[in-house]
Amino acid sequence: MSAPVAQEELPILEAVINIRNRLTALKRDRAEYIKPSEVNALYQAVVKQVTKLNDVRDDNTTYNNRVDTTLADVFSLLSLCYLTLGKTKECPAVYSQLASMRQILTHMEESGLYNETDVLPFQRRLQDLRSIVQHDAESGKHPEALTKLLERQLNELDAIVRSLQESLSDISVELIPVHQRLVTIRRQLVALAAKEGNHKAELKPLAEELRKIDSKRVNGKFLGPGGIVPTSQAICSSLLEECFDILQQIKAQDDSKNVASSLKPIHDRLEELRAELENLVLTHRWSLRETDLYNYSLSLQEIDKMRIDGKFVDADGNRPPGQYVLLYLLRRCYGLIYRLLSSSEPVSEELMPIANKLSTVKKCLNEVYKYGGPFSPRDLYPYQLALYQIDSMRKDGKFVGVDGSVPEGQGIVMAHLSECHELLEMLKESMDEENNQYYDDDDDDDDRDPESACEDEVEQ
Image 1 (spheres, rainbow, N blue to C red):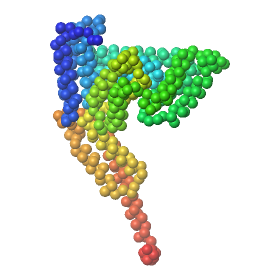
Image 2 (tube, one colour):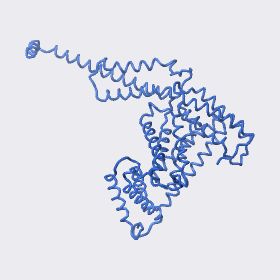
Image 3 (spheres, rainbow, N blue to C red):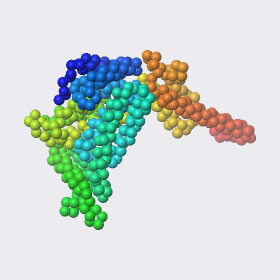
Image 4 (cartoon, rainbow, N blue to C red):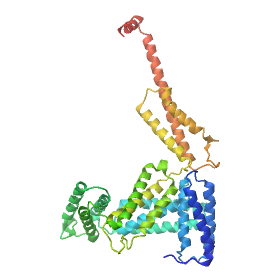
């Protein structure tokens, strides 16, 4: 439970709630693009309140009251606004990505189900994000309070990643392949448990592989070369037993999807969230506004907080069957949000329709060039028209926003535009070469003996 808010912090809380309401209204307004000027004004307002908060607080005390939770909401919304504006290489955009990574890494640490290939991408991504924060800290582009906050969060996530890697280092070299395969099988089993329908055909090869792994044990232990007993037996053995347990649960309750009726509302909500997020992964270039992810994150956090000691419970405090399925869906949703955040392009939503159109034109031109001609001017006209329309949108060589500002992503869009023009010129050149070849062939026909030409005409 959060601590009470001190009297001197009440005006700050009121101001921060007001900022959150304005950001929420900005997020909901789909009729207009988010304007950089509006986001910047709200960002400066937040910085002002954080400065006031630092002045009334002790640096050596850890605080967790309503001011902190509201500020976390504000920073999440601001971060998503920065991503929507294409400002992916600035400090505020880092915040939401770190929050998403923390959720996934915490669940990985809790479950103990991961291998080296799962951890390395997070380690590399943390290094990339740290370089963004360090650059902004050195340049003074953003306030010291923000860069320090992000550095502290980066250090905390680095500590979690190191802890995960240390846990993996405890597994002996001989058992690493077994451990990696068991982690993969468990994920496949839980994914099957969350799917509709009967899974007998898909379960059979997994069950056979588990029995094959189990047969390698002697007196309940995995053996290494020369009959030695490697360390970390408990990790692999418990993971193997857990896989068999999930396998039996799926077989026993395949028809009811292994989810108790008391957990069905949570299951249905998670299924709904997963379906929407998976659809966004497929269509995010055309339909995603990064600020939309805030509602998904909020919903998942609310569901996550319903767990007691890591498990979902019913009204009587019991732990009904179906825990594996719900945890799989919850973690799957967290993973999809992180995937959407990390794949966010440094292009403003205002320029994204142009970038998407150019990407489509470039793809079509590449296909046309790949398969070759013959072409006519009429064939290339639609592409010329599309590029002309995009070119005419520029002012002084730049794409300008509705409010007169210059949106992020000019370099990427201009690069796409140049590539399209180059491809179009290459196609025109190949068309000219084909026409020249055609006229050369006509000239050759004219140079033949007139009688032969006449004979040809007669034969035709």
